[in-house]
Length: 239
Image (cartoon, rainbow, N blue to C red; front, side, top):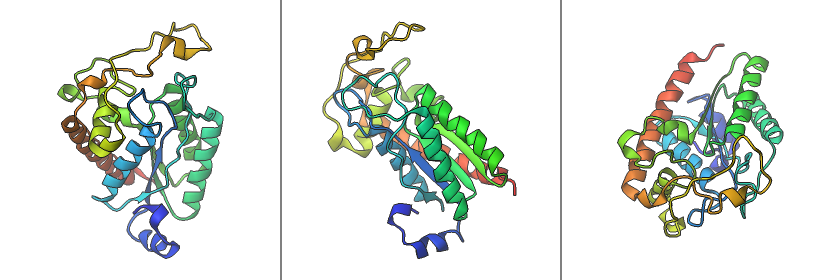
């Protein structure tokens, strides 16, 4: 049930089928020279839609902005602060709760550490504030922690084999060729202003290893895992 396409009457009827909602969170962020700026949002929303085709669950309109640290100097990246992200998610969950939703899956297409920490922090705060809700917070990359033979690239992360494969499957018309293998060389723990100097191409992994077939398998695996998570979350909810 895609909320942005529903009338208020359809939404009200939908509450008789489920009290669970997925909130897709993305970014406007560089994804190398070959993937679109909205890659994270596109992938999170696609996963959510495919879940809704197999089970009754509301899909909230996606949040297109997130916290981007390592890519903030790359052309096209438009980020918001971690504090703003927490405030927006808090207000969205409060509003959805007001209208009857009780189980929340915050599904992020972006896996940045500060971004995810902000989502987890506000999730914990909302659990304390609203006793009858349950919340799960996960990133797209969490779904591939045991990716095994699906992914050949060691340490693949951003705009690499995984994301390029998924986009080749779900939105091939938006993939502009293949970028070269690259990893950032940021001098951790030293903080630097010009992050692009240490990561010129904006790729973290090896897009040349990507394929449509891998992307299809990844999407199917991810959908199965999200459905399993929702079933556990609904059984876990108290109140």
